[in-house]
Image (cartoon, rainbow, N blue to C red; front, top):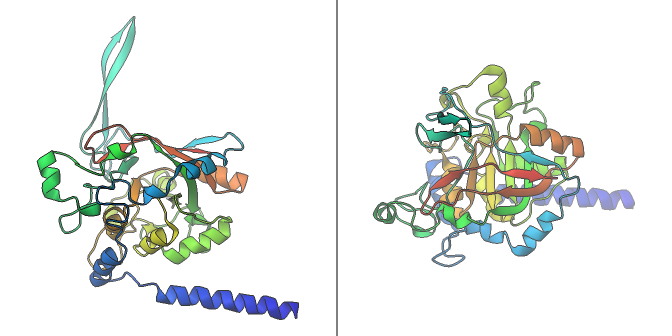
Length: 331
């Protein structure tokens, strides 16, 4: 009788899971993408002037809960070292120029050779303005408004001036059976789907909740160190566009990745970065690009837990469309 009950429960679980997966719309074509942009839209959900999107789920209570995850007092940077030389995987690097050296001290000047946005610098995209769909950003901010304001008039990086403090979850995609190389990275072009994230919840013993920041480790920096930089035209391991449904279902506040988040090629018609549009424009989910999870993955594995206090402080730039930063995980 006990075995029968367990078997019945297992069959029910499999049936429900399979049914929900079958019911979830796929995102494989241009038409699928455009439909998802409409279906997943959070425009107006928190009012016409909203600048936070699903970061509204980061409540005062959520921050207090996240602070309770600090047990060992271990802190880990989630940013990569700022790149100061040209490479095939970046269009801009940091110029650091020493401008004064004297017996009383020294100073330097920092400037990027281009935008910090792109494929190399750790940064947070503003919710509005950075990515637009059919001429509009999240909640209807138009490119004409951006042009007239000479910057992002609403939903700029300034909306996070008080920092992002919440529960962070590392999804270590190298733990998925048969996905990673023996050296510990995913090869370019490997897609991580909605169902893969569900599988990682089970593997890692963690459950995503509303207001969480989820971070995807593919081993990008480990591969780059071992084999050298490679052009993005050769592919990027990352999230498949159907992860947008996971973000909506779970109330994820923000997402991050060790590259630009989207898998490349995307596998969605001729859309190159579909998740960027789905997350930023439709859902209102801000994106951390080019983070480095090499160390935090080792710490999480050693401690046997993949949740931590996540803290990020973008620069206070009015009308800014993003900001370089150094997020911190605290266990």
